[in-house]
Image (tube, rainbow, N blue to C red):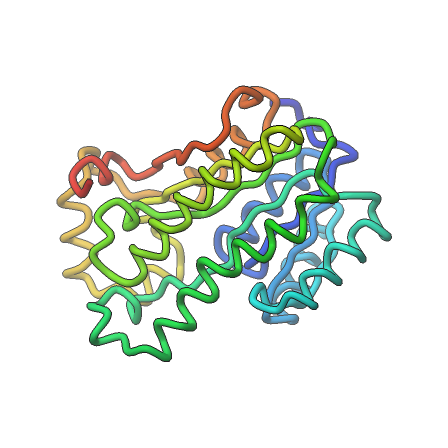
Length: 253
């Protein structure tokens, strides 16, 4: 991949204030793209954009809730006005704490509604808002973030990520005729700072026991998958979910 592979391209990244979203922004900006770090936490999104600019990249921030159609419509309009268009959309915003890795009866309807609104409807809202302005742009690409949990779907969280896999296939069919590729990444257990803080040791041990590779996943593993899927090398790939899970998905579905 060229260091300026994405020069002149514009990427919108939801959940861009931390974790995968911030890492995606750094990686794309380092390859020449302008990245828009979107986050419901305005301070976190702005800080991520500042860090990317300090590293020599081009970045801006936009505060928005992916469930709010008006906010997302404004995001798209302002991105086109300020940067000329959108080439890459990464639907990364989502809820994924240990709070949702429990049976649905335990989660309760209010939290379930919030979970599905963010993980599923947020992906739909952003995709619908972006598709018109992405049509016809060379190698236009949408990346959704699913999860290895979407293969076993044993929790409410897993069900939302199963839905994301389905949305990826449906969107790929709808948008393919307009030259827009849609793919997803299904991470396994990735040892981000948040995961290390939130998941109890026994849960971590149980998940790793199901992997076929006895190694810890890192953010860079997901970043590399994203870089491939938005690249010209993946021009013939759409409607797919790339599992990046050390073989975990093989043991759960």
